[in-house]
Image (cartoon, rainbow, N blue to C red; front, side, top):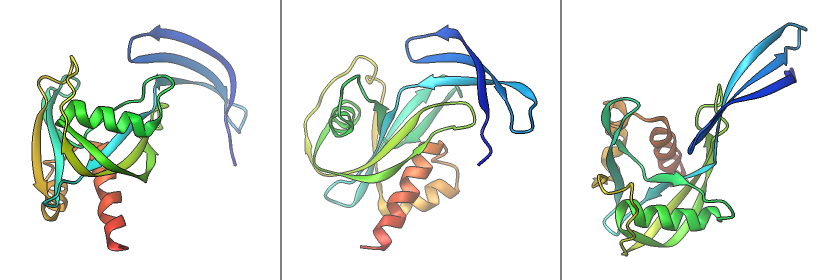
Length: 178
């Protein structure tokens, strides 16, 4: 395996949600270059299915792309928090439902070309109403979509963020084996 050796690392930004560092690395061929790395905490991404076989999606404005996106619920894992506890909290905050059953489906890196973030993917079912309000979730709107429509929403571009596409495709594939 060809690895890059880190020669030095400099933190250039330390924000609330992300840190940015610039690493000087030596490539396998001996050449030196730099890598800009965004450090972001790990997160959970949630496929929430209601009793009527609808996927609970959220619509929210994303400033970075200046659009409202249709996404699966997701969010950060607090320090010392178990990922399953984060699933329960995030789902309550974003959808107003608490899952009685949580099952790990897998996980993936969001953008490994420059970011450290890893997303733990979970399936949440047996949902019961249980609102939990957070200060940054007031503008999130809930959307229920039949499972049968998910593939067409992905191919049409209506669902266009990587975590939602990856998570939903993993979920749809996992259903084939059941």
